[in-house]
Length: 246
Ligand SMILES: Nc1ncnc2c1ncn2[C@@H]1O[C@H](COP(=O)(O)OP(=O)(O)OP(=O)(O)O)[C@@H](O)[C@H]1O
Ligand SMILES: [Mg+2]
Image (cartoon, rainbow, N blue to C red; front, side, top):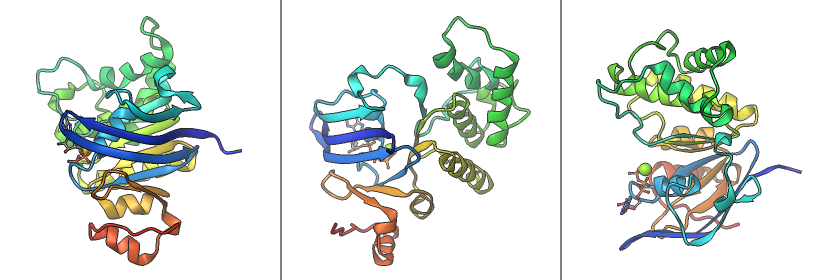
């Protein structure tokens, strides 16, 4: 049996005066890679924030690792890279090492001390995003793209089972985008479940094996990439609605 990771049923959501999601339904199993596609304002970030319990929802049901979202407490099983995480100014008094290692507290408990093995994990996470050697730099002294890579390392250090990434490579240079995309694909091949949005739709469609495509009505069409025809893929690349009959 495949392990169910996330189930979203009949989810609807609105901000005051702004309906966003309407009757969204999808299920992810261990090792799935979901790409969320839609125009600016379609509700991609909103959906991710709801899954992370950053926004309360009232209509529908979400199950994480088989547990009702409201009861779910094992936050360390989930990694998150937010849209435009790179917003530290140059005075923010934390080093790269502190920012990355802080994400081990969820597993270790706040009062526990970091071991040499933890430091090794930190260096390995930095190496994965091509930022080895930066551990003692102040986070605010790095460029936007470098900060974004540090936030990806921060999400990876706790070895989450489910990794949510909201446009993780915005502002990151082409070579690093390739590096990061490669890492994410490898983690996915080894069984990490991934949910990702990306302004670069073609590369997301290439990497993902399931897609949630938001069109005009906010309900999202959930499709397996392998069920899409070439014509439908071309429509996605052209920013058009996908007509799916399944
Ligand atoms: N805090 C908020 N209060 C009110 N409305 C909001 C809030 N956040 C987002 N919205 C609105 O909800 C809709 C969905 O926003 P969301 O950020 O989820 O879109 P998105 O698909 O992530 O867009 P983008 O591609 O620009 O990141 C938009 O119309 C937006 O204006
Ligand atoms: Mg967004």
